[in-house]
Length: 213
Figure 1: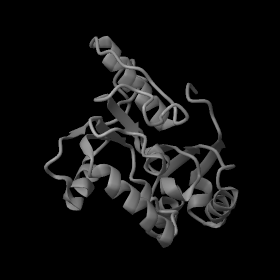
Figure 2: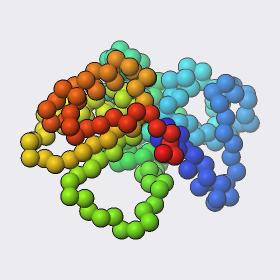
Figure 3: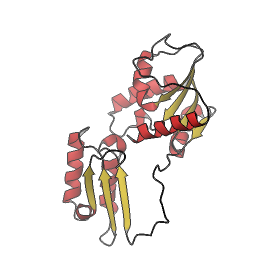
Figure 4: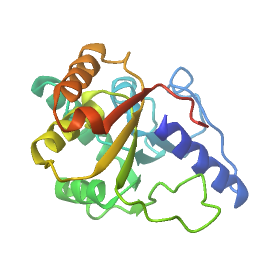
């Protein structure tokens, strides 16, 4: 996934700068498994499991790599979102700092009373560099790389695009991503796009593609 690639690039950058570290799994992350005062960098995907296990000692240092906040997933029912928010608040109260992918997440953390903690913004960078200056296209051409799930916001985006697009707008959009995670969401999304008089001819779904492709 995009988050996996992002984390991989972070590890490569740390190694290139001479930092020593190791990666672990949730199964190994249990009380007493690591020396006291260990510095942990935790992916936000694992916040629910880590909050339930509570494997950290009082001297450990916790940093969070936040791709997105689990409690703000657009597909979460209100009850589940509230439980996740409590887990986040409990863990973030112990956090020594945060690494986020953009200003929006930084602002959300500040609004939640965490402005005094260090918050480092590291935007995702393209991993394929252009070989020459791009030729400006005559029409807008967009590519979305994402599974068709509510949490990624793609269905909501396409729904909004269908309301805003006009007959004179010249654009094409391709979507590369899985449909099997939330098959009902994906099917409804693609059906709505296909039935839309403007989006049908302009939006195409490429299906799942390996990251390198």
